[in-house]
Image 1 (cartoon, rainbow over the protein chains, first blue to last red):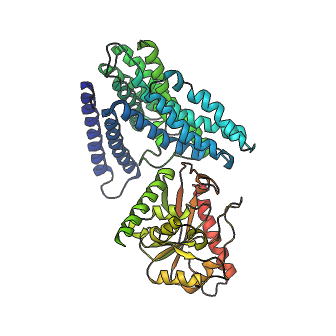
Image 2 (cartoon, chains in turn red, purple):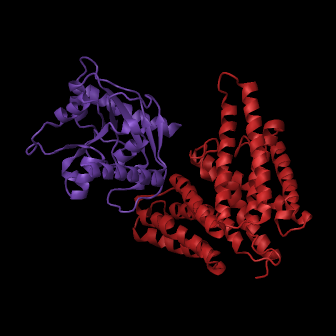
Length: 315
Length: 214
């Protein structure tokens, strides 16, 4: 348990923001809905409370360094894939392939990250799981919807396990002059991307007029998108001291991951529409499921990982 | 005796935790609420885990007084199963074979209801492995309703468990499950066996469709 000094400062900032959000919610509740419960305020309250829990969990995991991050994200991958594969096409013949995805592929991917075997963890799911799971499914001999079934399973693995595992993989990147601080890269990624989600929500609620993708996601507006992504990029620039980046670099990287997060939300909305559901799950009160909360992080993590590794790492 | 009770209680907790880990099961009270009335919960049956899920979503004080009705030929097969069936789930074990049985199953159930227990019952009588959503009901539910006309019958639709644990598979797949509780029904005066079974069957199916449409 040895977090860099910057971590304490960041936590103080995050906790102040949460405390502020709780106070604003309480005031709103008193003003807008003193007697009867108002659905929007209830939802806001649930969201803020869930944020407290999520921040506490993430902070706890980060205090335990690589072990904490690997275990936390392995569990999140499990919870996310449990939601994702509930909605995908499958038949009884997929039982072994799906069991292998949960009980073999997922733990192996996180083990490879734990032992820092970059050459294998970056191809394990896109190559090995991609080739072997369809073999397992084919051996059971059911051909109906075969391509749909294996593709949707692979998609679930790529999103929920492969992409998500790039968050703890950030800890394996070695940057000169940044030794022992790589946990702060996770903090930067999560704060900017989740901050962007929250800021998009706030800007959307306050100023949202023009819908940006009415078919995919009726709640997303141009005002929310521009206000959220730009303010999150400024937030990222303001957090340069957490990172090995200069201020302008921090701004550009934050812009990149906030954009990826936004588009991640759009893509996952398209899948939800296709499958006819509003939320992926129900376990995070006010937010929906784990996939609903993680979609933006999952889309930005691999890109963030590769940008940092390519431009800042020595190996 | 004491140790046995504690062990049974711990095992019940482990089973419920495991069921929650695999299925993240959620209760939707779509008709009645989770109140401590004496009830017969009747549910669709696709998997051996069915009543574990119903049991897991009941609040603990209701869970303690809710007993599954299960086949003795399955639950008395091994020592472990006997312990789980008798001590952990406190099941009412019924001999499905008319020739060998000593006690009438309906009498056993009626006695448990009279003691204040609620029941979990699978009126299809066996696990449904067909393409049909719900098999025709056996007559047990009707006989129970006519013997205990004051007890509320609550339809319960268990969604998705057949995919988690299809018949014959060893590993459960982690997938989300929902348990949906509907509105009470009772046997009407002058209602015949066929009409009642059809009505209760339709009530359970309607609950499934309500879930699919939402």
